[in-house]
Image (cartoon, rainbow, N blue to C red; front, side, top):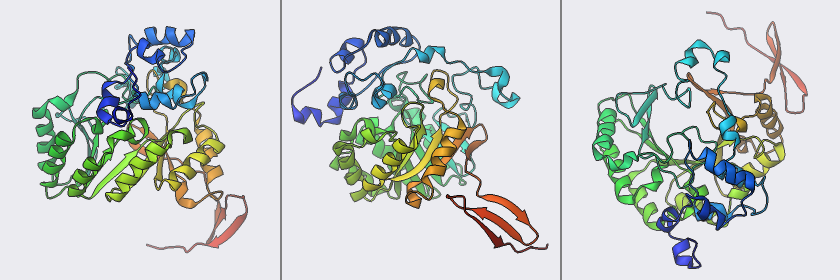
Length: 374
């Protein structure tokens, strides 16, 4: 139920408790089309729906192609998506019995820990998010039993990290780890900070986008005690960068927390140079560093969001040289081998003692290249 009380609206616990999970609640905020009603019922048999009142309030109520609507409201296309299993290399196929072929990589015997890279781990704290994004790579898990209540599992995750001195970087993830209380989050942070070899703690969260009210002064005071803490968030469209979102970012920055952004390239939402350029410019104004632009994962129920790789390459090509260098995110694709960067080729030729380069305008330059002997 919506409220006219600004005190309630600004309370993240109210936002979380009053998130729309039913069609009736959704109709309180949006004009729902017949196609969306059908999709809500049919898609709901496989995937959960949840969206905060705040995030729904950003949607243009009568626009079926609103970029936030497409990220938040179920579409019948989620049931049309299939994996083309026969086209996948053999090392993919072992994972295709799940909803995401990447899940099995890095699995450990501790359910909340993924250890894909030598020096860092992903630490799942919960399966709950304020809003269940329709493009999410973990959408089949969304809304299922929450790991945050299992203290024994959390402790096993901390013990896993403590027993492995090669782990220097811990990424708290979910779900969204900032759906847990300050007290529970501080328990994890304080325990991790007692491990001498843990140098960096990162938090992956979309709450600055979908529930910015969560970034309270009290939260920021707590998190300051456990630096260095880094946060990566997930703005996908300029319309998500609101005054509330900017206030949340400002509070994090004032608490000494650097904020980066990891966008996903989404068909019909941000797959144009114009939209992506506006997004990265607004991020920089809010003092958020564009970090990654992900090619959308191969996920059942989200394949309709995937573009061709050429679309992403064109966007990067059209940003580099045409805007501030650190406004250009690194374009990456996730594979079972990890994140693989995708870049336009600026080396267009080589010869004895030289290399031929081109710039963003396709002007060329022959640069001396020393021949190293071994």
